[in-house]
Length: 311
Image (cartoon, rainbow, N blue to C red):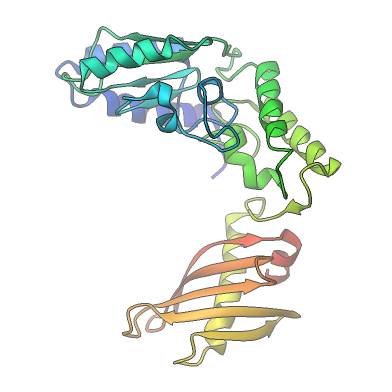
């Protein structure tokens, strides 16, 4: 489904407002507190991009690895956490943990934490708000373009020295845009910013500094096309399969396909099927149900030009 910013805002805010208020004794007060948080931190989101200051400001012993907030020592004690564009709210059950979290975060320049007065998630929890103070929002509620582009570029350059392959926009889209997202925008960055992020990534990839480009995600193709590709490969594997032989090779549209077909439960009800071409140039998998002649596919991965041969 096409990403629509207003719909996504409504869905995430409604979902997380319900999560934080449904079990407290005064839901109306909780909803008012939630709206105050949104007014300060921006809309609720599902996941941050890798370059977000909430993730990059705290010290990280694994500086070249992507981390979540739960892996960062400065946020020790978080529990029942909801993310927003500029920061997050977390609701530990221990007041001691809540106070230690506030003290820990406030030692880090660029971050601010404080206890909330009203309950969220549970009457017995101690909500804490954590804010990345340098994150400024555009009028549309997304992160200011100039800042986001700088942080994105800094994050991309960090990986250049040890990189072996260049990742495409489609491979990295979630880690660049956050979630929920569309083809080039999200609740954290608008289309203008996302479009420039893609141009920056492609310029860096074209420079050769990361090595050869690794194609893997096929999300640039429609869901219908991805399903057709998987079904074509899986159907051919099933048609060429002989019972008792789990592994086989066959030729399809000029390509040598390697397949593995297993009777999942040894009862003939379900077959687990995986097809690969050229190592990992193209990979498709799913399940086949012989009795009803039904294929259940999983999105394929690989190189676009090769995948499109099976449409």
